[in-house]
Image (cartoon, rainbow, N blue to C red):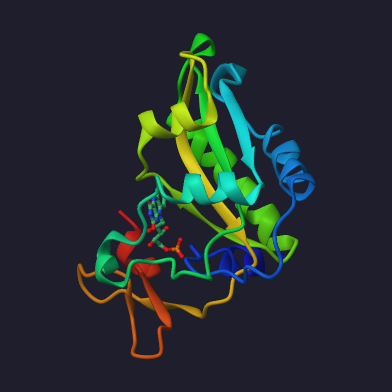
Length: 186
Ligand SMILES: Cc1cc2nc3c(=O)[nH]c(=O)nc-3n(C[C@H](O)[C@H](O)[C@H](O)COP(=O)(O)O)c2cc1C
């Protein structure tokens, strides 16, 4: 059910590195993401798949994780993502961040359905990543999606008042507040 997938599809920052997601598995996810809506059907999105460990490690080094828990330096060594999909704009076709969000969420829901999990990473070193992946000038990375087999526990909790910052307990269980239905209707 879609509701189960939406609940399962959390932002994971810990992975089981013993089961690496393959290039073919990520290709399947991209093959689905290419079918989603796009403003005026301009289809500006392009995708780069990183599956080789050396490239995955290099992309990892350019990404910033869990700013609210910066002291933890997530993801921990030995629990890093095993693949990345970088969503780019081909600027000759335009740029639309809503297109990026729709594609990213679709890709992650498909990953969750297959037993994988991921995390959208908007904080990354853009220029360095473009250089690393050898992008032409018109290919601009907009969002990095980390992927792998999740190996951490995450719970959704009800947000109280204005506080929505995620947090962890002493066992490293991750909690994500979500606003109540009555608090989001205007
Ligand atoms: C557009 C976007 C960019 C994000 N960028 C980052 C990021 O750079 N680093 C990170 O650790 N998490 C990032 N996240 C994950 C959010 O922190 C996460 O969605 C939020 O804490 C709620 O957790 P949940 O996805 O499990 O509901 C991003 C999420 C979105 C939607």
